[in-house]
Amino acid sequence: MALVRSLGADEVVNYKEQAFEQVLHDVDLVLGTTRGDDLERAVGILKPGGRIVSLVGPLDTAFAKARRMNAFFALVFGLMSRRITRLARKKSVSYSFLFVRADGAQLGDIARLLESGQIKPVIDSVFAFEQAREGLEYLGRGRAKGKVVVKIK
Image (cartoon, rainbow, N blue to C red; front, side, top):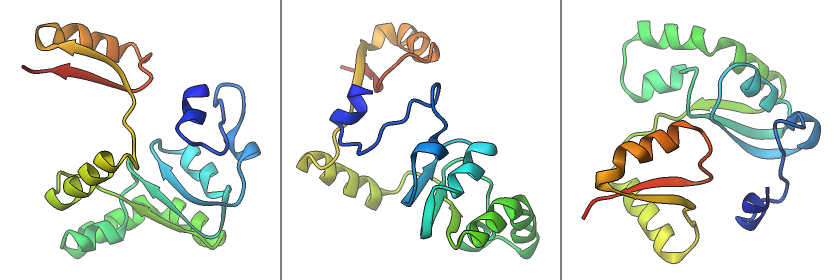
C-alpha cells in the first residue's frame, strides 16, 4: 500500500480486507479492469456525471459504431452491455468500453508524459533476454509489484 501512496493515491483500498464501495464515494472516473460484480459495484461509487470506462468489457453500441460495424453487431453489443448501461443511467453516470490498441499518436503522447515525469512506470524486475522464461514464470506467480521487463541487447 505504501507503493500506491508513493505514486500519489489519495485513498488506498486493500481489496482483500475492504470492499472498495464502502470506502470510496463521489469518484469522477473509474477505470475498470475486471468484469461482472466489481464493475457493477463501481457504478455506485461514482458521483452524478461520473464515468466508468472498462478495459475488459462488456462491449457497447458506441464501440460498434466507432468501428463502423453493422447494425447486427451494434445490437449484440448493446445487449451485452445492457445491464451495466442501465445501472449507469440510473445513477446519472456514463459507461463506455475502451478498446486498447497500438496507436502512434497515443504512444507519442505517452512517451511525452514519461519523459516529462508526469507518469512514472513502476518496474518490479528486469530479466536478460536469456532469462525470459524465468521472467514469464515470475510474472505468472502474480507477485510482481510493477512491470516485469525483459531486456533485449
